Length: 123
Length: 331
Ligand SMILES: Nc1ncnc2c1ncn2[C@@H]1O[C@H](COP(=O)(O)OP(=O)(O)OP(=O)(O)O)[C@@H](O)[C@H]1O
Image (cartoon, rainbow over all chains, first blue to last red; front, top):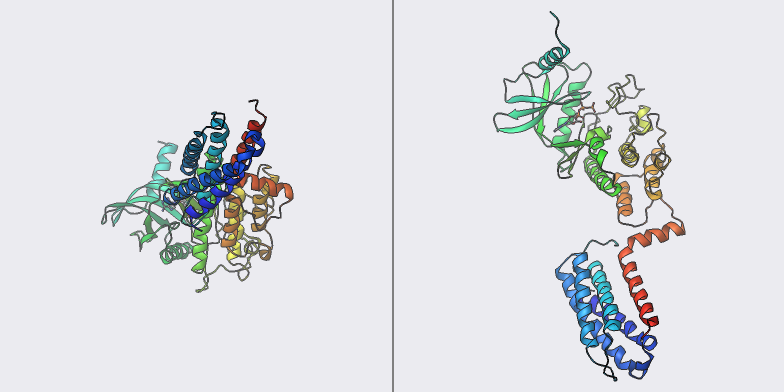
């Protein structure tokens, strides 16, 4: 599996898991949970492809993680910009975990997936 | 009139210096080994600096010239970045045999690591030594005198394995006769009796003079002894009882201890069968993979996984901590 495809799948799966946590962290949004999970998956999927493409071109674990952080934060920001029904925003709640997930995808796409990358060893 | 010690020393050195009239101009002495003296010299024809290894005395009484020639031939036969290229072989006007080779700039393995405590850095150098020896084995050459003094580390970390004078070539049958060590070598010097090698680094079968039973696994033993040295900063005991390096340095990780102990097994059949398998185990250790020579317990397994996957585990932990914090954060 190529790195972009691997990034796509991993980003989508993590997006679904991350979106689902809103059920517990923000009970007031439970009625919209399906659309939250859907948009979170799309966000993870697009970010995952971009991070995967980066990993294919740049073979550096630190740069891969840094790029993942930037992309994860940016897409999370796009989502957090949408106000909720009360007109409020969940910047921290969405951006902080989104950035970490971006880093995880950045790490994983450097280590795994066909098309080169950092040497296969942990840390 | 009495001559001072310094003057005497100088006269001795000049008397031993090869005749400089020929192609090579001697610059100074680099080192004196059991087989010959290594000089820094200038090749007048090609205008470059070389190293000249000159036999200790003319004539071949102690078989030294044969060893020197064998060494030059072995080096010429093998081509590897870990071996010094030989340029020329000849006889000096005073009758002594010499060969000219590339001059290596660097330090001996034992000196090089005096100020480098990092085990991974030492192991990476060890892997390169193994690569060079494995290449020699692939060409039917067994070194038989591997020790830290015979390995040089260059300025860019390149590794060169020296002193192939007692090497055994599998297909020409050149070998030492069986028998006990009949001449005790000076510390760190190669014995020039019927048994060739250095106590502490010599496999038991080689020390017994069992020529037929001495094969590639004798080099595996010597590499195990070099690994022991790299892990403990001490030469293995000369009686062949090196055993576990952890007994000398408790900081040695258990898998490395097992690798070393297996390479140093008294029975050749208990050692790694080839240098490649030894090197593969060292690489496995370096990259956090399981080591063939070591059966790990569940705690060791967990700590190896934790250090191997440190970054992703930290990232996942950070995510979970953040999620938990957001869950309980008062809003
Ligand atoms: N090509 C070279 N360039 C620079 N220094 C060298 C070179 N070859 C050898 N030396 C130096 O000379 C020393 C002695 O060389 P070598 O081990 O080949 O000699 P030897 O007479 O076979 O020694 P031994 O007593 O171990 O049999 C080495 O430890 C190294 O420091």
